[in-house]
Amino acid sequence: MVRYFLVFSGAVAAVLLASLPAHAINLGGSAGHFKKARHSFIQEGSYAVAPMGHVMFCLANPTECRKPSLIRVTRVDLTGQRRAVLDEVNRAVNRAILPVNDRSGPGIIDQWSLAPASGDCEDFAITKRHRLIQAGWPASALRLAVGRVSNGEGHAVLVVKTRDGDLVLDNRSDAIRPWKATDIRWVSIQSAEDPRFWRSL
Image (tube, rainbow, N blue to C red; front, side):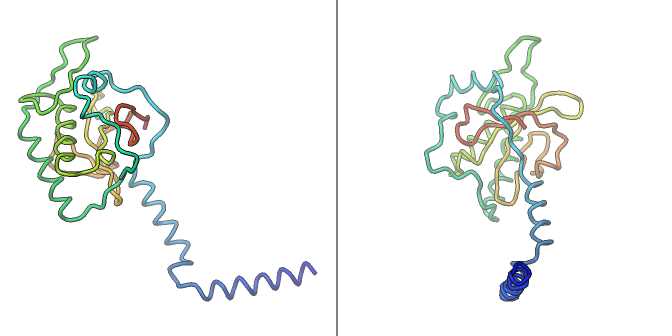
């Protein structure tokens, strides 16, 4: 009886598989696509302590740190038009702010400022986020992130979450790169649910 059932089940499976389109049973392709997608997106961990400079920034600029509405768009389609806007905003902000390290010593809280005449990495990042939100981009897809660069110095950038992968807007370059193609050792990123909270990376 068991043998009959196994033979019958195998025959049914063979018929079902034969009726499916070829792309539906291409397991190798599916696995490859999944692996590529997994490496295209930042994997977030548990909640982390927010940078103190960002906490102070949110207290001074509550509209920049508003919790998104219940209907959130956490990733955007990267159309040609959107890519052009990203390039324009990245280049414009990189040229509008004179890069200056505003840290003045140990124990001093780094000041995060929106659109200053001069400032350091996080000022570029929050200004780019602000400009893109003004252009109609969903706030929950625009995430500030911090990490360390190759010399060990802390660094902040804007991560744009797209359905094709996570892209990095960095004040050190006009090139917009996938997150895996940077020299940043990631530490934490803003939460999509509430920009006042951060998650480990």
